[in-house]
Length: 346
Image (cartoon, rainbow, N blue to C red):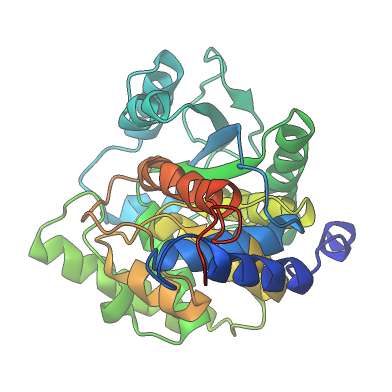
């Protein structure tokens, strides 16, 4: 992992300055494209070019894993739903498949830690272990398991980029993964359990109170400082969070933009930032999840979400919805006329 981290550098400041200067020369009032102008400047910095090429083709990778804390009753859904949804992804029947088809984004599905055997599915098989241990009773993962899951994400990012993809999107699947996410977000933001713990798949008030108490007790038991990202993953998991962190690091190492989905990706991004602060230079917040911890994570990461549609599905749906916004921002920078080229006097 240390070799991977050595490949990451900050965004290209020269390209960003050139992009900002070009924005001021385009045939529009300065600042009239709002967030899209800043976004295009950021993509120039990520890729080291001005104007950057449109980041296409794109791929959304759905990392799937299960969580031992499910045994504590933090979700009404049975753990077998994770495997059932993987079959749905593989068959093209999930929301992320529909959105991806609409926006010309390819879909990859990865078993990094599903408890139920899914060997029969046509997906990427990279299982580190069949689910985490119960974070409320002890460490969810060992250090070796954490490093192995991070390597799954980093190696896959490398391979996808070698295959020609120029934009990586995050996706996730795992019953009870918002419990682990809440613990991770609390660790890296200094927030309390009641602030960052949400309803996940739609739990009632009593279950939310129980889930919050589980997160609060786990935070007190493990007491991991924000400066120890590997220990935080050991304490709380999940395997998809670790793989996503590696995936973000892989995008940064290859100077390719990564669009984050919701709260699971936000938690993973906090881990990745703790491993290497420059990784966030390459991340774009696709949307703001309805999960309360996501807004807290985005504030700490310093990322502004592109859309806010009250989504809380996961799968990568918010990231895929945001992808056309990213490409429009880049096309505007690259393809709009300047005042000079249009013959408009300053």
